[in-house]
Length: 253
Image (cartoon, rainbow, N blue to C red; front, top):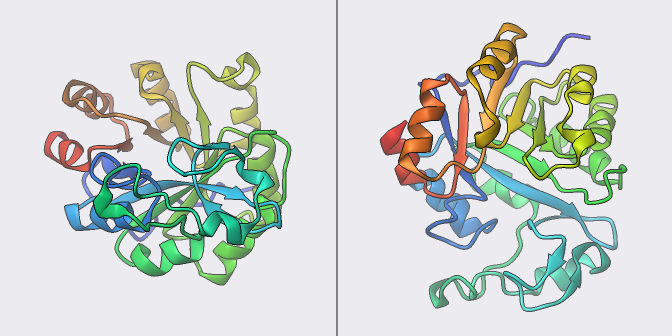
């Protein structure tokens, strides 16, 4: 099976600059204000986290457990969609953002999809497919996203499910230093053959970069916030950097 092209109609100097959860150093993460600000600052794209509610609807939020950025507690997947939407996820960051809500994927596409490339991170703490895969595949079909968006995940089974449902969706394989040893190994990435590799930036070496590019894969990395690290990623030929400080990344990249 041919690996789908990633962002085929978009050309820009490398590395691409993606706001991690939006321009999250300047606005509350994973909210429309953070995504709009990333676009206004000149980012090429944004990364954001997608989870499924108790009643089977997609919502944008990072943490499995509520409480850090929302005035609530418990597992997000145990909450119904309407109750999640009622939570204020902006006030924790600054009073100016009081009233910000968890957006839906459709709202993100409608608000900034014409201005930014999109990296949907599918957050699935169980690793087993949980229904979000089919909902995201349907979203890509309905909103014609395959040429300007991708899906990344730490879950190889979720990515494999997306690939079976819609082979045209470009995929990104995520892993980091704290990932389970089984997921740090390269076997599942070789089987999945994603369009892009998404290792945490401290893991990237010249050999990794060379091998990924030799296979025709892009190399994307996260969360790169310090100018020295941004410069090192650029020197290694990384294709996309994700970070909280969009202005720093644009200045250094």
